[in-house]
Image 1 (cartoon, one colour):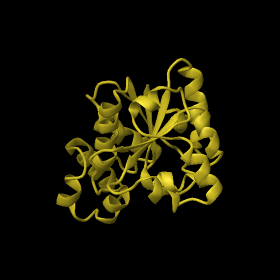
Image 2: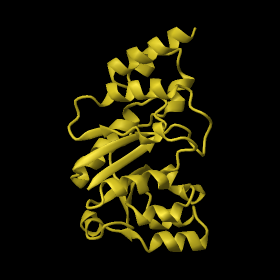
Image 3: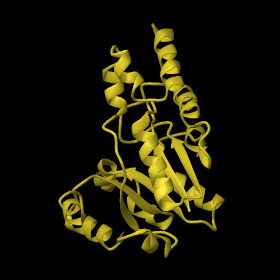
Image 4: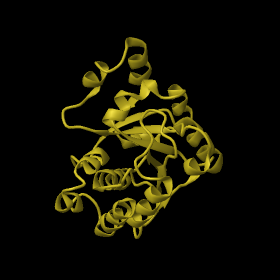
Length: 214
C-alpha cells in the first residue's frame, strides 16, 4: 500500500513529518508520498513560494527510505483538488491500494472538499486520530446523511483496511506534536523556539529565505 500525505507544507515541520512516518510504520506502507499543493482550495495563498516550500521539503525528508516527494500538484494548473491527484495516482499505481493520510481537523471538514465522496473510489482514508476521539465524537461534526456515508466505511483495524482495495476509513492513533505552520509564521522572531520545530537544515534555509526578503 502507498500512503499519500498532502498539504501546503508552509513551511514543513516535525508536526508533518513524525505523524506521517508513524503511519507509514504502523501500516507497513511500501511507500509514503508527500504531495505539496500549488494552490490550496480551502485556505489563503501560501506564505512561501512553491519553489521555497519544495526546497524545504526535500531537505526535511532526505535520507528517509521509501519516502517520495511527488510534485504533480505543483505542475498542475488551477486549484489542487485531491480527488484529481488520487485519480492520477490510481492510473499510475493501478495494482496497488492507496491510502490518504489526513489529520482529524481536515477529516471533520472533508464534506467541504471538491467531490469528496469520490475520494473513496480511489483510496482508503487514514485519519490521524486524537486521544478521546471515536465514532460518536465524529458524528457531531457532520450532518446525518454525510455521517451515515462515512460510518459505513469506518473499520476497526489495519487488517480490515487491507482486505479491500479502497473505500475504508481507519482512525489511527500516533504520537502527535502541537506544532503548526501558522505557529511558525506567528513566532518568526523567536528563533530558538522555531529551531526546535523542524530539522536544523530546514530551519537554516528558512532563515535564509526570510533574510533574503528583508
